[in-house]
View 1 (cartoon, rainbow, N blue to C red):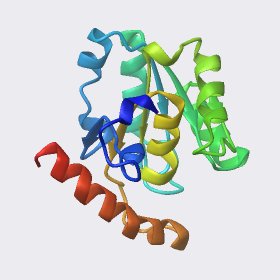
View 2: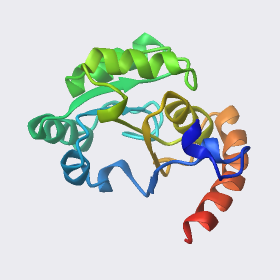
View 3: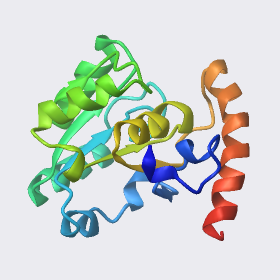
View 4: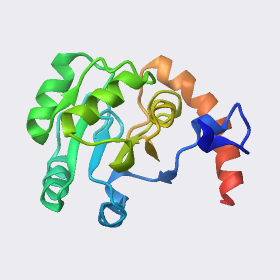
Length: 175
């Protein structure tokens, strides 16, 4: 985590490289111009509301990304029955039970896309699983605001702690 020298040792590991209101407002064209070729995505509250099926918007996004030349892969801590049909609708490989924030799911996702740390980025909605895991793995991390406020209780509790980290992140960013 040498990338985080100079930041608070406790909070810096959770800071994303970018913070956006939605996955659907990310400038993927610019990221492609910068040399990124693989995108790892969380599913729930990143691409669709929690437990929702693939939507026209999500399918169209993946179609556009694939047409641009991006490889994509879903990495989720969910079980196979949730992830497989979603991935099939998106026409993308996937890793279920990814055990985020462990590095193994991110590494497996890159392996399935044929990309590496230098050209892969991650998009997710949670600091303590998604972003921390991406940062621990050495990936460029993009945090998006959750799509739906209705979440499981353990996630709701984590969101309170995330607000503290986001406060310091946004302050450091000058926002």
